[in-house]
Image 1 (cartoon, rainbow over the protein chains, first blue to last red):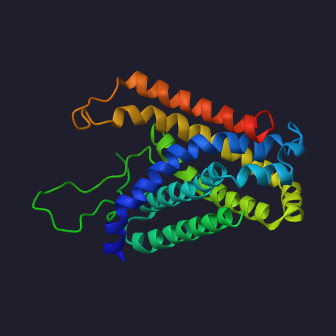
Image 2 (image 1 turned 90 degrees about the vertical axis):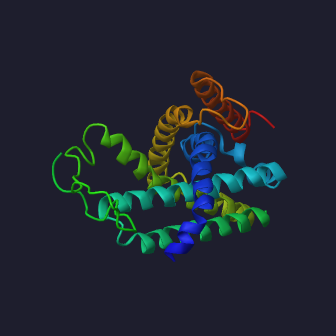
Image 3 (image 1 turned 90 degrees about the horizontal axis):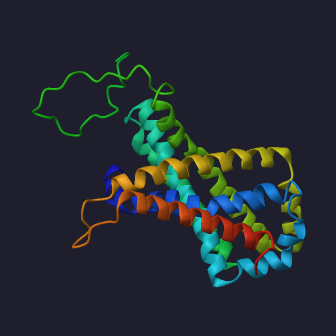
Length: 119
Length: 146
């Protein structure tokens, strides 16, 4: 398992880095509107009515943006929690902790792919 | 320098011929002085992980049809979700400011034959991209564009 993690490190770091960069670029506007402005009534809910939201999301660009917005933060999260776990608990359990966290990121990414494909 | 560090935190997989002093955990770690920002930066990982999973749920509900979409929009009005999204916004802003400040300093002196632009140019480009993407996303999602 540890050897696998070492071999996959370049891919994990790529996804982690893009999770910080692209994740941050995309999440700010998303959280502002979808998470705050519409629920608080600052923007009318019709802005993301089902028909409009579906039309935006089902385009190729919409699908790619949504995929990046859902999947990349998972890798940023998994890798930083792993780093925190090493700092606080040492490297003894790192293989198991990293395995669990990256498994969550892999399953979440696969679900994100499935979610955008079925739109 | 205060209490001993975790003995295995930075342990090498192979014995080193170099003699080293026993590791010591800095007394300010984890939430004092400049370690606070470092620890908080890592801790935003929890928020990002949850935001990603919540994003999957949002897209999944959109694929399930109008009823599931309406139900999800109603759920997002719950104060717990609003509070979480407020925390997520603060986390994203914190990560962006910290990472974009670090990014220009982490560039290699040369990338092949080319030299990277000066650090202020990279930093300005990152902030311009962040502002531009955020305004574009906000305008599209709130119905002001498209």
